[in-house]
Image (cartoon, one colour):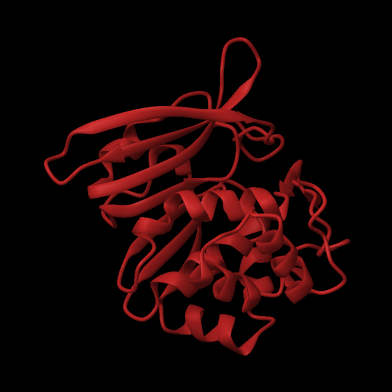
Length: 226
């Protein structure tokens, strides 16, 4: 039922994701309902489809955001630390912050400075979002998320919101024990697959190829070299 879960309101959208079994966690449903997607998607925000946000970037379809959050759910706990690579307009980053408050930390990192500023402005559209920024639970920074964010981990969960060229071992190294990485990977064949990388309490790493997807690529700012 992917692509058929859109609604007239934010609440209707999330209820349809639940009804179509694309979202199953009650805690995540509450988090998603508390974040109005209209603050982060400039056009047709409650459609279950990706939307352009400029700079050759998109906000993913709601069912893909739900799927990513469900995959990371065991690591989205109060006090947890989450890194969101390719955070775009800031939507899923904000949902993660809802899951780890109080006491947690979520950092959204993006190559594109205009998107970093956009995500901050989007989050400030609600009193609750502004409070998360003011208290430091949520931050957005410009940087090369492909190499993680040194000095601020380890991260309980790392989400990558665009197709990477590989699993980026720097991100795996920055996972906590235990921790989980969710990343779409573009393969040599041209296809894209979701990979879930787990690190257990002893530091043992396991990698699992999940299912085919189509994301925009994880790239530099248009016109920049990186």
